[in-house]
View: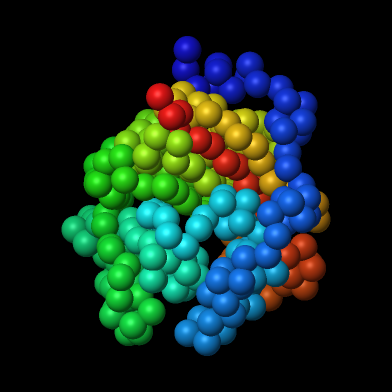
Length: 280
């Protein structure tokens, strides 16, 4: 059975029934002062801090149950938005692997992104323990030693792999995540949400993904679905913008055209999913 057929077997109602309220999660688990301090760190880029209200790092990392003594793999960290939080949080007791683009990537844009990230990691002692590895679906999968990671986290990357490699790209990615995790380890995923009633073809160019597809890919790789959080949801986002998700902040693809409209919407509506690698 292929992925497309498999995801149709899961009902949206079942997904909703397992959704965990971020407020309930925070209430049940109490505060995490170390994480709060990492988020409030003076080393963080001011432009990144301005996006906290859309990316909700405290609630998101709490939902993924990230502890300061864990081994964490961050997939495709880009400019280091989450790295700026995870690096100090894991600095003393944990380990952070940043699985970035390959330095030999055929596209210059990706190579340059990797170089800028390496320069950033060398710019402050808060990043001194970050281990940079490489990841490319179907090509580079050595994101961390096999069976050593407590958490693998990917933020707004799934749509890229789907658009670049269709089903094969995401299948390869989830296999790499599964191999890196310890038994019982958790995979956390955040991505732009395409409503389930939209045509599947919209995923090929819009930057949005269906939550049911993400879940089906994970389960096909052997992961157990734990639940979802609405912490990164944005009901103002209709996911049908000309130019796809990049019409919204922070990209604002259309420049000054309808700028106020897109700024009122804010950043995209996102699903936040949690999976576990089975213990056995």
